[in-house]
Image (cartoon, rainbow, N blue to C red; front, side):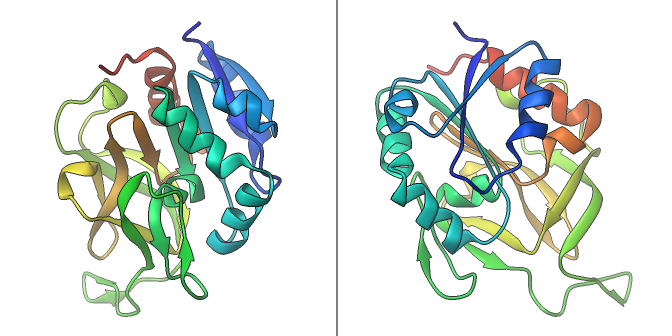
Length: 212
């Protein structure tokens, strides 16, 4: 059933808050660290917090990285949240070079050191509410108006190789990808469980959306 969501537990993510948010929108989240369950899922959510390299190492050690890729190849929808979105890309330069899941071509890199707004330097990490602007109509972003605010906590940003993979931008000294999507794979850089109406709407959309 479309409301059954498999939450990938690799041992380092804030699963409980995401689980609660999914329950609020009427989904039936199932938390698992079992690669076989992940392989058979129709809709997957990959939350993440912490460092890219450690997170990817944990995913691989548990067999969850390969399982997630196999599920997508079999037709599953996958949504990465925060660090989980960054995992979707080819690589990250956070504390060295680390390979990601390779589901969306591109890289993850730190915000520039000289970020400024209105002549003032900006702090990194980027923490707090920020407007997001959808690039165009997309089922994941139904009901999300231009300028709607979401809650961010991150020091690194995703840079897709193909700009068409960016579904929405945010601006923090410079534009960056806030929502991405390629085929059946999607990512949101902000925390939907902390983003009130906007975050819940996106989670609801993911629970019900159909992708050809």
